Length: 541
Image 1 (cartoon, rainbow, N blue to C red):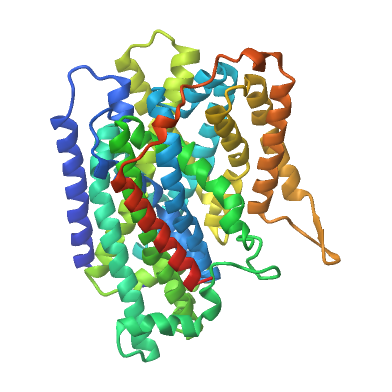
Image 2 (cartoon, rainbow, N blue to C red; image 1 turned 45 degrees about the vertical axis):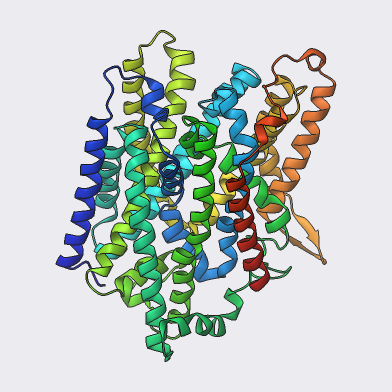
């Protein structure tokens, strides 16, 4: 197996010093005398639109993209890019309809919204569910995939890689949202530049090995050599139909998945909650443009690795004799890069991992501190004590995730594991938020019933066989999400209409049509994004 050269380590060390040094400078230059929770967890009023957009993407793009999504690109092709490209359209909806409601009603955490709109029981139950998902699925998968990648690239043992990632991310996380937000600008620059260089070199390898004249000739060559990897929509009977079930990608469960993730997720929305509406919207639309770019830097290299593998240039010897799995595609591809460039690509991967760990850890700390500790454990805790509790929560959550991470070795495509198991609660959460936003009669009882039944209902649909064409087959998880969402929406409406509280419900939020007006610049940017998406799906349908 190839490892990093001295030049690669020098490049990585420069990246480490720049990020850590900048984070240290941000922390002390913007430090306030009286530390409070809004400043520490939200950086209220301190982040610019470009910092918000960059931080959203840096927190979102992690090892699950560079490793797991690239692995899915290796296995199933460009179709996996739907998660990214549809997310760009979703961010427009969140910016127009969700963000103004949060800001107008001074919402700082998602459980706070549930408490203010429904009651503390709904809020507490969902806070616990979020913490469990964030720690046991999201944070754990980031540690696992990140350590797996670094182990493959450097030869350093998996456990040492996990510990090193935890220490690096702690340097940034413990400084609060200001440090995370502004260092994320550097992280995004590094991950995009490193990702583009890796993509370029992957295409260069394809052109070199398969006889294309230029790097640009490698793209049509990829499409020729792996034509089945350049379709966005799978048809019934396709090998990967269960992962991406046809038209449901455009008009079904993926919307529920995305709207929940981008609009009802503390991990993402937190970046914009401390800003004014115009700044927050500009940050979200900037993030949407960046999302269009992500498949170029993660999926295309995965497809290139697949083509190289088919021609014998990508094999088990690169893994010291271990079997090649889809999630090995990106790390092995990086090992084929020349010295120096491999260090930059490694820095890009590390930037994605560390930024995502920092963002996720900060959100875990925010929810636990403000919605669990302050409300149920120590209601009179000082602002300084709450900030310290948040810092301890970061450490505790990281330790738990580090201990569980090795168990994910049993999965071939961890990205699908993440999407499916987060999808167990997504339909219920989105239903609670959607009706909470736009139907004032929705009652606390309806929200509580939905919160309780969503996971059992999702489990039932996972194991409830579907009779189709004379044989038994599972229901694709995106379709399961659609069915669960439809059922819980109807359930919420039925419970609300039979609940006496709904006739005089005073828990509705302040919502009026003027909140949803946008600037001409925002309209132009949105039309441009939708036009690009239309072109992509037309070409690669």
